[in-house]
Amino acid sequence: MIGVFDSGVGGLTVVKHILKRFNSDIIYLGDTARLPYGTKSSSTVLKYSIQSAEFLVSRGVDAIVVACNTASSIAINTLREKFSIPVFGVIEPAAKKASSFNKVCVIGTESTVSSGAYPKKIKKYKESVEIEQRACPLFVPLVESGWIDDEVTYLVAKKYLEGLKCDALILGCTHYPLLKGVISSIAGSVELIDSGEALVELLEDDDVGELFFGSGQLECYTTDSKDKFSELGKLFLSKHFNGVKLTDL
Ligand code: DGL
Image 1 (tube, rainbow, N blue to C red):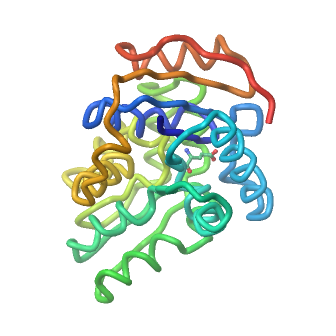
Image 2 (cartoon, protein in one colour):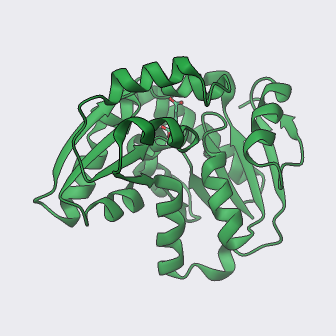
């Protein structure tokens, strides 16, 4: 059983790739009551990440996937020190994939961008990569409101992404793959790197086998409205979505 957490529904974009490749049994936690993480201080994100991981460990998971770029950029090392089970994040896989390009743009939450986690990791793989970062804080509330293909979202994206020049664009927040259509209509023909997809590709290479393969059971928990979570969850995981339970951390 794999435990996956995010501040909201964004991490379901990662779940989608994990289910598709490994058909894993997953316990998912969306900490919607405290969303967004991306505008909070590092110490707050760290505290929330530990509590989310503790919740999943208390449910008996064999590994944790931090399906949140903000939490991965701030808390991954602490989570790995604190818990004896494997902890996988989304920054390293996307950074590795991006390092095969010359000019990379990273979009993410304010916390992810200011942590500098992506530039540090990308340069670890290839020092010469030119990197530009842009924080896109309004994307998360737009996705959580279900405004995926809305003219307001398009205008916001235009403001954030106009003038962008790169070969690859890291969608450095797990909510952003839901906005792929809007983002590529503005960014043009750049390679979009989805951090969840990159994680699954890396897991395949690492041959994690037994740990991830399962029968596709998905159990979802949220810390706020079950109805809102179910509505959005169904939109993106129609095949595997089996309802949602309320919890407190
Ligand atoms: N989906 C998250 C991420 O990948 C967090 C968004 C937020 O809570 O601000 O960063």
